[in-house]
Amino acid sequence: MSVSRLHSTDWRGVPGRVVDLLPPALVLMVAHEQAAEKIGALATSAITWAPETHIVTLHTNAPITKEAYDIYSAAMQSASVPGYAPPAVAEFNGASGSTTYNNSQEILVKCGTMSNWLPNTWNTANKMLGGPTPLSNGIVTGLMAGGLGYGAGALVENLFPERYVARGKLRRTLGMAGALSGVGLGLSNAYVNGRARHTDMLRGLFTPNTAEPIPYYTSVKKSDFGISSGLVDEHPEMRHPFYTPSVNVPQFNNAMWSDVGRGAAYGFQTHTPPQYAAAVTGMMSGLSAQHQSPIISPMTVIRGIASAGVGLATANIAGRALSALGGLTPAGQNKLQDMGLWGGMMHAIVPAMFGR
Image (cartoon, rainbow, N blue to C red; front, top):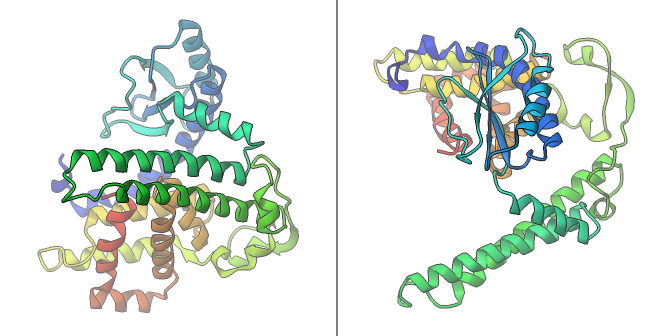
């Protein structure tokens, strides 16, 4: 059935489907990472999974040896996937070098760069600078992105007449933008490392990315937040409201589908479209299942969006907006839906989240 002909009742089954498929997909992802690492194909491979047939397909940028395939297949079949028998690696696409798959039947579980030179160049340059550390990551990223930006600018300048593109200006601008992206990456990485090691950003700049974080053990209980009992390992910053479980996922999902129903009542979609609701509630249900709690924090939402490959700026804005809507009382949510603001925000947030 085409996407346009699906009814809201069909879309509403998406969150439950996500909750069912997420645990086995996570197991397969970890098993793939370990197996692909053994045969040296982690960076240049991808894995898709067909839940109905439980067939795993390995995609690589070049054919691999039978020995490597046997090692990978045996490692994958030893994975204990909840609710499934050992997966069959019956299909193998090692020649096309692409991750083309049937998205109506298969799930893209993990995808590498599908290129040899990028990870090799990255790793070699980081090791030469004593990394990987935030400092080496920032320098390498700045040089690579700056070089690519300068080269792209030079190419465009030579393709278009001078009356359209000034010579030298575009290449300098794109080169500088690429270099600054490296600075931003290094500083953000240093900040994260510093917080994890309970130091400052300057020391975090030279802290290896492989360094173990230093946990804080407190007597704070999950039951204090209405979740399950047990102690929580938390850092001091976890007391920030952004880390406090405050987004009730079931309530948020109900409010989302309530807004879908409001639009359908008028005969045309004036509020949240069902496919938008399915995407957002599916993601929120997946995060809830992953953390084994019906109540999650705004930071969990932001990280969940960012982990899907969305830019950090978009993830931050979208995560904050969704968390704010989820943190409202039912009366507040109803008021926004009556005014049409809820649906308007979904039209602005969802396409940006999914790269449209």
